[in-house]
Image (tube, rainbow, N blue to C red; front, side, top):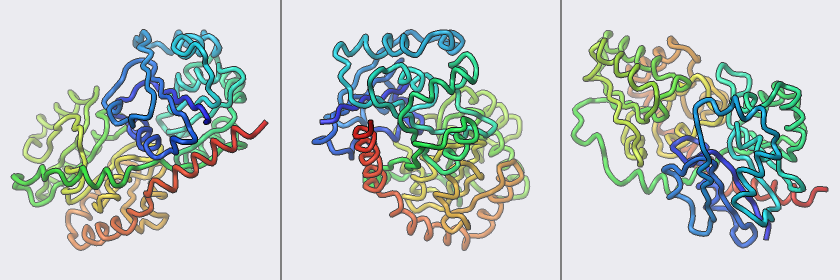
Length: 378
């Protein structure tokens, strides 16, 4: 069997952390012996790992600004501290950094092993992935990247932006995220959270309450549309550091009857399935897990023009509406959807057609083929 180690910081509520259990659930466990290592803490997605997956949390000391220290530590020492301290034999055939940042540098320190780095963000956008902060300059970063055998970008834009950022184009593979379509559909049927909601139109968005997700722009659009007389209820699911800012805006502008922030919801799928509209207002994404989940559930979708949007919703917006990545674009798209029930019905129909695109077999086979290719290479 091929022994594979996946490394990431935690298994919290983020997109990459949520997608990894989907991928590992469908990988052939008769051919691949999988171990997952988290560096700092577990997270809500630990429970979603299949029973055949070995899991270890390093529980390493963490503090704010740790990258200021990490940049001075050689990758070989990081690998010894984070990995070898847990695995005395360290007999993995393949080591995978499944998140940008520290996991990438840790993997660089693995000697005599095949290495893969997953890329989840737009490297040329306003919100760059953070792993360059882990190196003493660009030259050191590029030297470390040269030790990686293959890179996986989760969208075309992620791949293109990584090439522009690093100059690397060889051994770069496009593999979309793996969605567990059957699980999403099953869990979405558990309840209808809007059953006692008097609003005629429910809008939902799911993601961390962080600046990159663009939620302040969504609230600005909600205020404008409220003032124009539209009736709706906006549900922003997620938790994060931006909550006080968003709550203050809601209170200041009297949006309590139009907007709610219910926090992190372990099962967001009923909120998505029973919504009249899903919106992604992000400044930047790699390949939005939540947008693909909304499409799987047959909900009409609006997304800002971020990485992965056209791959999910179509180059010509066949399967969902893609708006300009600014406050005005978000507001205009919402206005169109709220004012035109036929438009919402059209995109709901197109989402249902697009749903089959997210069959897990397609992406899992691509990952297995890549593993085999890397292991066989010299």
